[in-house]
Amino acid sequence: MYQSTSTVASDNSELPLAQKNRFCSHWKQLDELQLIVNIYMKVLQMFLTLCQFVVLQFL
Image 1 (tube, rainbow, N blue to C red):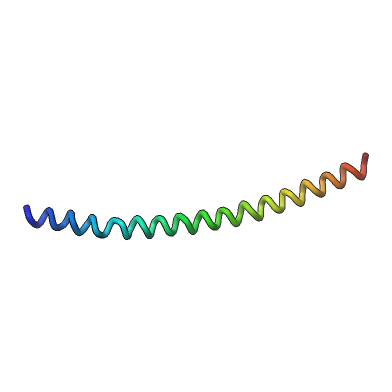
Image 2 (cartoon, helix red, strand yellow; image 1 turned 90 degrees about the horizontal axis):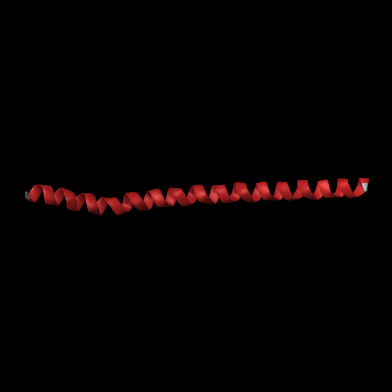
């Protein structure tokens, strides 16, 4: 009985650390995603500006 409760207690103490590590890696992935999205948006904006320029040239 006592042994089972102590293992539960130790599991609970280890859990937040595991969650924190997972959370940190999740945030790292989000930062990378944000960077990719920013680059993609800049490229898209440049492409749209170029298209607009080309369209204006032909009009």
